[in-house]
Image (tube, rainbow, N blue to C red):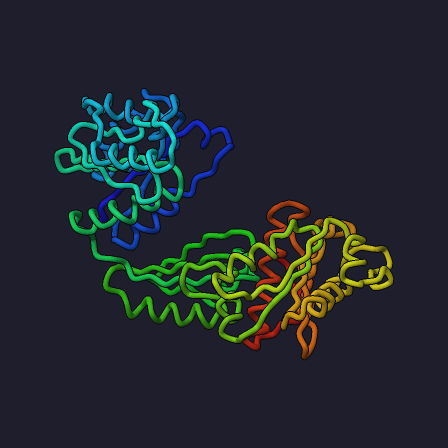
Length: 420
């Protein structure tokens, strides 16, 4: 049995909907690589009694407990107080962290207030874990064969303390179980149910190999795992999976599609510009995030209505479909125009999502089109989506536009319609 860990995430803002946290995902992936298992993630408000009880319960179940959040300077940052109660320990000042804090304030010319000093307090007997990107240090508290880690809540600080201190300590001190061989396939353009249907039709996976799926708008992670020592079985299953999924697999490690597209643009020495209708600039932002230090993106235009595109792109109203809705013709015109106006090698466009029933009254689905323009031709793809003008639909449109770039650069088929 693999050593098990629990995460306790604190903060009333996490339960009110004001803030979202991906700490469990970050931690679970990191622990899995070490052969450890995250078995529970508990989210609690800023209630010292509730936090103290949750920590005591977690320590009774597992040997590794991590608590995140509540280490700031404000009066609702109560994690230290809760832990002091749970463990019967005093709260003390960490002198190295205090000196660093004072130097930071001195260098900035700001006065250091007593409330700010609360951030560098730790529990008596705990080991401070320096925070490379923030003020509040993490802590490691060893408890008769068990260990409690306390980490700051902001994602960057949580990740820094986790990578710099928690994971190295666990790797050095916790005996891990034999690691299960695994394979990962990142899929775009095919929904989770379609992947499962394709597998079922082929009698996949074989005995001894377990599939798992993690779906998000526009992409699905397909993970295969097998028992420790079954590396040959896993490798054979991975080869079968690769053949079954084909060119909808865009990577075999955990990476977002825009990063893959960015790398391909660099490798093929191509630039791109984008035009979007009612997607809020998500495609342009996704491309910009992928370019790192290399200027791949020459421009981008986004508009909430079709009419707003006409003047800048030179697309005339008669290009539109008869009822004025965005369709294949508009997507193609947008892609062609933005490429020519910016001088980019590739122009990519994501069109408006048509509400359900507008294009096919007998079907409760929406649709959108993406198009790609290059010197040697233009390609358009239509997609019918079972979600309409919401964030998920827009995310799908962006993913499909990115996938069209990927397919063009790799010489894969670009012209087809799909249900997503």
